[in-house]
Image 1 (tube, helix red, strand yellow):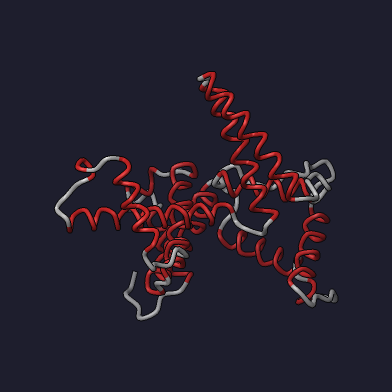
Image 2 (spheres, helix red, strand yellow):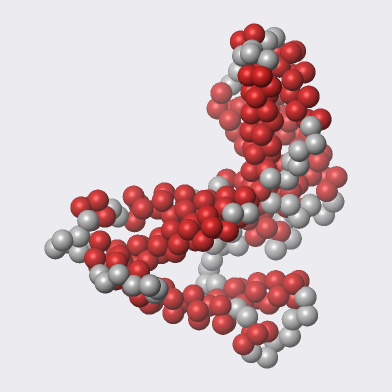
Length: 266
């Protein structure tokens, strides 16, 4: 390809086709299939989210490019099988966006985000097959907490949910008691099941409160990393290691990190 000052999406499509060309393409790319590339697709989506979280626009620009490359990659493989190509993908999503936004492209009226959500759900329902499950459309590859909330949201739309959050907290206490019972019996399979039940209820509490459980855990993970690394920094300054501390001393050092005036929002 010729070097250009400004490449377009058509150039990117051409690059992908060249990488997959059996005559002179890239050996690694030629060995790939949908399943082998899928993990990279997920990884790129997470890296976009990470760049957004860090507020780094240069990284966001780069990661969005990496993510954009993923559907082009999958579409190229699909075109080789005669299934569809990237232009079909673009057509389908454009048609869907127009169809699901009649308040922009049609005669519907929407004055708030809740109005838009109602219209979106109505359009999706009209597109759904009559014999479809109410839970259809929730991808199995989603992170489990996010998937739990999406499943719960689907079930809630047909009225299958608690009306009071106090009922959900009561359910959480019930599930915690069952987890403790499984732990007492040292039943590994039962413990695994009950831990899942606890997490599912916690995800539901987040959904009811309008909180993204996956985002909440991500922020908690980042907070843990920040505080733990702060402990490591303090220990290094005092020429000590964790091996020099008792658990109580570690917890005291942890509390010191908690009291530092560092935002836990990241």
